[in-house]
Length: 372
Ligand SMILES: [Cu+2]
Image 1 (cartoon, rainbow, N blue to C red):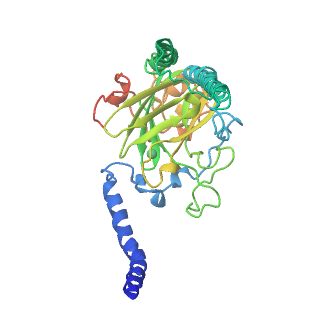
Image 2: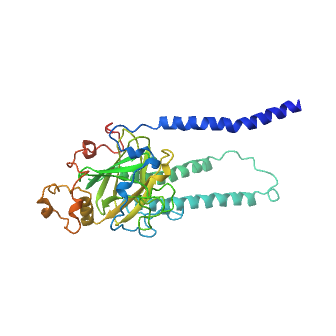
Image 3: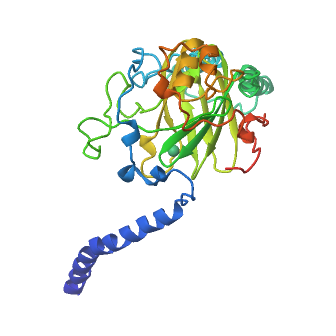
């Protein structure tokens, strides 16, 4: 009998790895099937990092603005990142000053009550326990006080939520499209579209020889990207968020904003970034094998630099004459030095407002259309 038992144990031990090996390819095949196929006309680079062709991004930009230490980057897991939007500052104050103080006071009060009860009603001092089971006054107090505390939390909380979802008139619209595993940024009013990929480390085995490696000026490892989402500082930027395949989430901690990028749905957030700087974020929805490798790098720049950047991408500022017109270069607010003539052709340029989905004003956080 013992021998039969051992035989079963050995057989199970021998079979398990084989069984696991058999199921692994099946599982990955299923996962591949589950991942939506890239439709014709979409960027084939979305198929995965292993086949990504970064050759278009090999040349390092002439001048990469390095991030400010301690701003827009993770701060070692302690506290909330310094906020650079009004909503972010209000929310951080609400958390740091109001909620944390309230939590500390409640904890101290409960701890004090426990200590009092343990000392005052210890067996040695109080041999005969009280038989009191109801006290109307105390019951009213311990019901009412928590309700009042919750109301005191709810009022500023709802006010904050309402401000987040009541965007002021936007100065600029950016459409953000998540894909496995990169972000696409479209500026429909400027005729600019590009993809943004994570920069790999110089010693990364999977980095192609002609692929630009991350430098410290680009940002921290796993957060630096080959192309940054550039926005003008001090302007209201509306982000319209959607996805090409699975659910992603757009999150830049220094702006406080976080929202899901759902396929077939347009979500909206907004930010008015006060300080020029570089701010890093990540996809925050488990979206597949390389979920951790689709960072977001936002650079807020003064308006004049934003106009120069738009021109360098082959786009034009709304209201300006199309950049393709020869005499428009003279009328452009961008100086000749800032925009080399070679940068003016517009491979990605489209007429402003070519994408109706991006210029609509969909109700906040609602599915507007299923264009994607
Ligand atoms: Cu993602």
